[in-house]
Length: 372
Image (cartoon, rainbow, N blue to C red):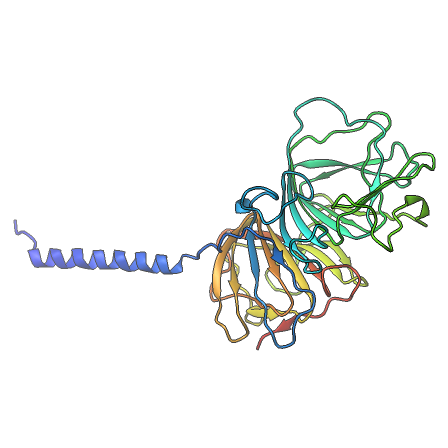
């Protein structure tokens, strides 16, 4: 029996090793890095400068420090020890005691006893809009229609729950008799368009209480007395898993959306967006931007690539984001894609758009612009 030539064997081994190294190099080249870890809130843009391009900002919320802990940029936790303030409007300085416009991630712990809420708690309201989305678990939200109501609606806000709360919307407190309790830990994101103040109500015409986040009273020009309010408003509450279903995106082919809120007059829109595995964007959607609109995205599930561009002529660089990443697109910042699929697994993210600035009131939202 003849033995195979030694040189031939070595040649095939060399080719196999070269091919293996080639594939390894290709795989390494195709690996998309994670974005740098952020530890300070992204600062928003209200008035874009003409001719100046902004860039996409990204926060990995799981690696972000809790407020007022070592490594945090905040001296005070605005909503308790489990708050993470990941985004701020630039209306006030970063070290302000009363920042205006904040996106906060919260992780409320489970209850460890069988006690019901303390009875006869009083509701409160704010003089600004706020919105929120439930990521996990559930919460019991008292939603009275009058400051004199003692046993109003108790709404169980669950995973997929959306809330838009206008100014002067009563909430909080507790029933005078009985009540309900949350059943699971509660994770959510909440955006406050104002400074976080709370105006409490009273019983039987008694005065309420104004509580500023800095511990102070009402600033000049703010009444702070619920008895002078001409009319209280109602919130918009929607269960995205029960009340609405996926439909085709009317703007971007191949994607799916759930409409959560759309207020044309006030220039505000919120949607859930779903991208299927191996989705590749149409050519005309490779680079888009808004001249004035702000867009906030939060990853609910899956993974995808996000490209960051310095301007319309920049080829851009991609980073990979997954669940619990926050992505901010300011005005005059390009949202776009490179070649090939955007995601292997698929992705679902919350997408909130403001027509101008970071408050309700300046509608409608402009049409998206395409970079040619």
